[in-house]
Structure formats: C-alpha cells, structure tokens
Length: 64
Image (cartoon, rainbow, N blue to C red; front, side, top):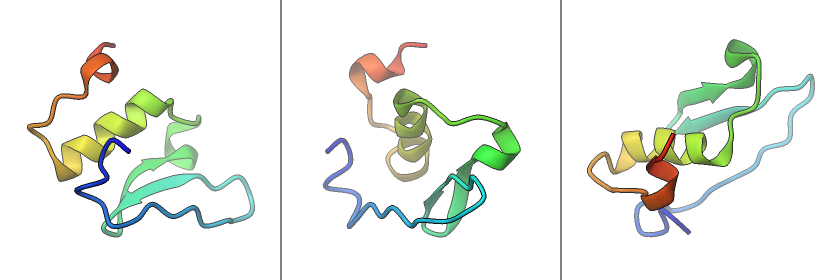
C-alpha cells in the first residue's frame, strides 16, 4: 500500500535454502545471506523508498 502508485507489483518467489532477498528492478537491496538476518518491515520500506521515491516521508516508519 505504501508504494502502490510507484510499483506495478510486489512478488514473492519461493526459493530453498533460507534465501530471502528484496529486489527492486533487479537490484538486490536486502539479502538475508549477506545481512545474516531478516529485515523488519520499516527497514524494507525505507530501502524501497530510497530506491524509488527518495523524497517521500514514511511517517512513523522514519523513526529509528
């Protein structure tokens, strides 16, 4: 819902081996393997925002 006007779709692609990557336009912006953990929702929103709408304020998700 946060980026419904900027994103055409959000897709979950099942994979094995504990893979969890977040990609925007083919670019990996979060990798569980690299980070060693899953991101929280606010972090995913910030990462996506920084890639597709850097001037947008995310409200309460901005607080760290």
